[in-house]
Amino acid sequence: MQANIVTRALGLIVASGLLASCAATGTLISAPEVRLTDVEVTSLDFSGQTFRLGFDVSNPNPFPLPVKQIRYGVRLDGQQFAAGETAGNFVVPANGDGEFAISVELDLLKSAPQLLYTVHDGVRRAIPYALEGSLGVDIPFAKPLRFETNGEIRVLAD
Image (cartoon, rainbow, N blue to C red; front, side, top):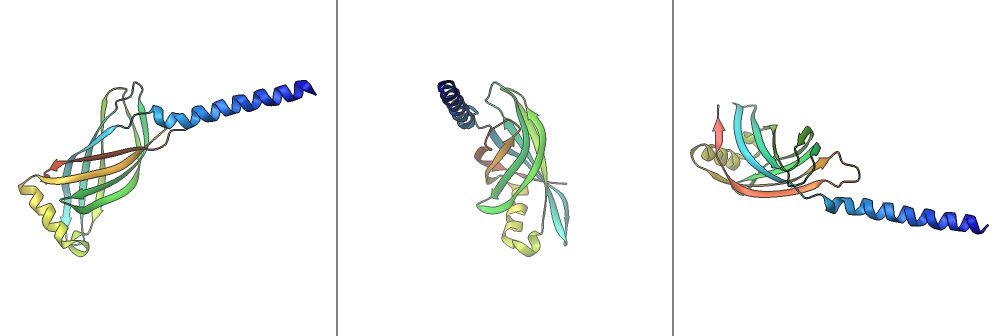
C-alpha cells in the first residue's frame, strides 16, 4: 500500500514537471522577424487583381524553424490590403534567413476604390506598410510565433 502511494506521488511529480516544461516551451522560442519585401501586381483586369506578396524571415534561434502555417495581415498606407491564412512548407535555418511568397486575389474595383489609388500610387513612390501575423511551427508544444513589422514598400507592376 505504501509503495502504491509513493509510486503515485512520483508519477504526479514527473507529470507536473513535464507540464511545466511544456508550458515553458513557448517562451523558449524567440519570435522571428518577418519583413514585407515585394508587392507585385501579377494580373490586373476588371474582374479582379492578383498580387504576389514576398516576405523575408530572420530566425534568431539556434535551431531551425519548420513553418507549417502562416497567418498574415497587410496594411498599405493605413488601409487594410490583404489578410488570411495559408499553409507553409519551408524551414528557416538556425540563426539564418528564409523567404516565402503568397499569392493574393482581390477585387479592388468593387471593394476598395481608395485602396486601388494607394496601390497605383505605390508604383510611383514608396508607401508605408504594416505587417502582422504569426508563423505556426512544427515544434511540439510550440505556440504560433507572432510577428509585427512596419516599413515602406513600392508596388511592382508587370
